[in-house]
Image (cartoon, rainbow, N blue to C red; front, side, top):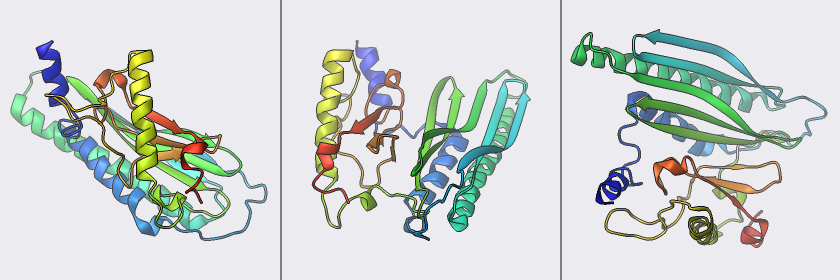
Length: 263
């Protein structure tokens, strides 16, 4: 039991970014900078889509295997947005992410070979994407980097785009000016974590103990996307608010939680 708690301590949210590898850490920096930047939160046009088809395709694939070192990269490209400037900016972000992962992977391999020589070392990395929502109004895409070397981790960056206006939503931008959205969302998530622990055998860190910090509140710019029902889905990284077996937790926020403050 003590050993298990030590593992929980070492992989708590205070250090979940540690140990994910140069490539994954690099993609985290690239993705967050793009997703949180105010310059990405604007509406270029109020013109409806007018029947245009917005889709996400794979721009290019890159694979390489060198002994125990392996990388796979699938770069997304958005097509069909009426706001071509937003589309171009996002596609550049995705290409930058992919190129950063490849460059950092190559650097990792070089350093590991220098340290371990011909000894077999296993390290794998994948850069890919997942379409979370694709309705008449909303496109939500998750670009992620999965890193495995002994243990595993992943870094996710979420982008929710209004197809009609070209706006890339920020969490703060969904709410009325000056509204406290952090408190009601955080309070709901705490209750939901406790429920999942009690009813589903969840492993969420709801309260502080000797080894881990309990979940307190979401960040102002917490990862999120809007699902096909129009609900906000709050996303956490692996090890951020729960044991690793919980994976990458998501919480769908009911309408009534934010009804008074949503725009």
